[in-house]
Structures are given as structure tokens and as C-alpha cells.
Image (cartoon, rainbow, N blue to C red; front, side):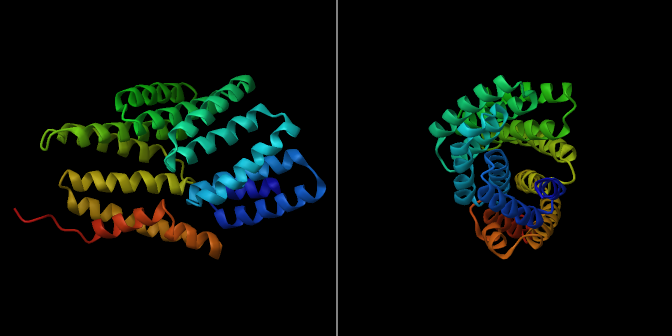
Length: 276
């Protein structure tokens, strides 16, 4: 059942994946299998985090972390701490995010997990960006991007390129009106590159990048194109929601991550440029 749930997760059938993880967690608790329990809590927590169910995700991940002493798996510890770092950063706790990053790096270095270490470096870049160091964040993201090319990971390339685009957007936001166009155009190209690299099954990742691309298209005055992208992403979000159970579908629609994305898409889909 664990393998099936993981396959459903990777294939983007998120409702079935959650059902499978629920069953595995219940069975592991009943049977006292700490290893399976940690892996399933980690996977479910990761999926809930993707859906924007931050509190439930953090509950699962902290529970997984609490069972890790009995398991002694550095790879799993690194993965759990990595997602907890992302959740902490997304919910405005950069200090806690940094602490989880340090713990994740230590565990993953001991496990020799190269690609996962690169993902943690991207999370470190996002914390730098949150603190206003967009140059440092962009340098780190670019290093990860080059390393991802070397190991032929298109998904990691997409993530790193997306972070670079966000750094450019942060720089553009600080520029004087009219002086930000070059950075916006470069960010737009990076978002387009990231979107092309996203694996087909990573629908939520693709939606996040494409909504940001729609916003930048509008900032560049390309309103018709922005509206088309926004309409496509509303359709994509509806398709994702349709795969979920009622409780997760409600969190997905109304939660702090995807509700703003929908609102932005609706505004852009109906927007017209200001006269003059």
C-alpha cells in the first residue's frame, strides 16, 4: 500500500495518495513499525504542505521527527527537516527555518544524498531572499542550477530557475519606476524556462510558476497573454482540486497558498490595461 500511495503521489493523483498514506499510517501505528510510520508521515506531510494545509503538514512532520530516534535514518531526517524548513519559512519563521536547514544539511551530508542537499541549498536561498539578500540568494540558486544540470535533474533545474526568477523580481520591486523593465523581462524568461522544465506530474509546481509568469506578463504590459495564462491556471487548479477528498479540497481552495493564486488569476483573466 505504501508503494501504491507513493506512485499515486508521484503521478499527481493526490486524493488517492492521501487515502493510501492514511491506511499505511494506521497500519504502522497498530503494528509498531517505526520505519514505515516515519516514511508515511513524511510523505503525507510533504503532500499536505504542497496543498497548503500547513498546520496538518507540520503536525505530521514533527511526529515523524519524533519517531526518528527509533529509526536512525539520516536520509529521512534530512527530508523531514527540509520540508519543515520550507513550512517555517512560508509561515514567517525564518530563524526556525534556518535551524531546520542546518539539521537537514548535517543529516543529508552524512547520508551522502547529493540531490537532496541541493534542494536544501535552494531552501537556504529562499530564506536569504526573505531576509532581503536577493543577490546572495540568486548566486546560491544559480550554483544549484548548474549542479542540477550536471546530475541531469530537470525538476531541480526548474526549482533553481524559479528561485532565480524570484530574486530578479525582488530586485525589480526595489527599482525606480521605469528602471525595472530589464529585470522584469529577464525574470519572465527565467519563469518561462522553469515552466518548460517542470515534470508533467508536478502540476502544483507548474501552477505556481505559471501564475507568477502571468503576473509578470501583466507588469510588462502583455495583458492578453497574462489573461490566457491565468485562465489556463484556473483550469489546472480546478483539475487538481477535483482529485482531492472533500476536506483537503476545501483547504486547497480556501487556504493561504492557493486561494490568493485563484484570486490573482481571476483578476488577470478579466483585466484590461488602464487607459493612457
